[in-house]
Image 1 (spheres, rainbow, N blue to C red):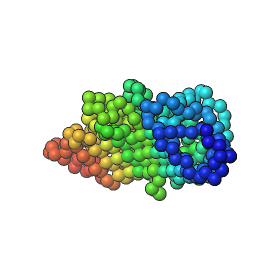
Image 2 (image 1 turned 45 degrees about the vertical axis):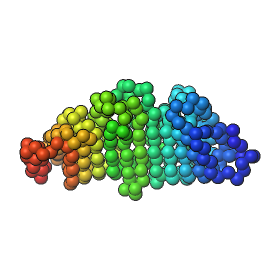
Image 3 (image 1 turned 180 degrees about the vertical axis):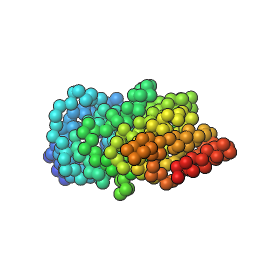
Image 4 (image 1 turned 135 degrees about the horizontal axis):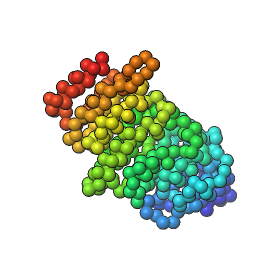
Length: 304
């Protein structure tokens, strides 16, 4: 345990492979707090004591926490004073998604801050529960993280080595949401990666329902994403100007993406094509076929 009496002038605290219990008086002076542990560490701090300190982080500008806290279910959380006027410019947290959510729910993070959240879902096998990890990391009150409403550029990735969603504002500030699962770095679990990528494509808009997304990049195993998913997902990005779809193996045909762009939805002014503002389309995959090239030309002609 660190106390203000012992470290009255402490402004930066960096602990590698270690964590410490803080007190509110000590927390009130810190500008930088970094505590990092390996994911398999067994001795972890009680999250409740850290949550009690958060409202005292009035000077904190940089916060990084990695595998520091024992699991703390939401239903055990009592009301706490929030950190409403924070100076945070950089926030990085790696932990169980429920712990991350409780930490974020206890503070207001300015829209200009860069935020990276890594949810540890080792041991979770259900595709639905894995995808739910993205939303479970977010604060209970989304107003605590206003960057969620400012995302204009969105990248959705599920590669063999990583699974994440990255949002960027027009000002260049970043929100990274990453999941750690057993499907990463294991070739035999390709179907699990493909199923999760399909769910990410289908539901990513639910994570940023109010953001003015104008650029969307999707990288993963395209062969697992059917036409219905492409049509449903793309129809929700009505301000989209740039679309890029990359098949991670460069083997799958983008024909379903092309077909989805030739669908429309009804409005009071008549039928409108999905992504009516689309100006740029980039596709990577098996596109050497004359049938695919003909489909692209037909799609562009239809959308004129």
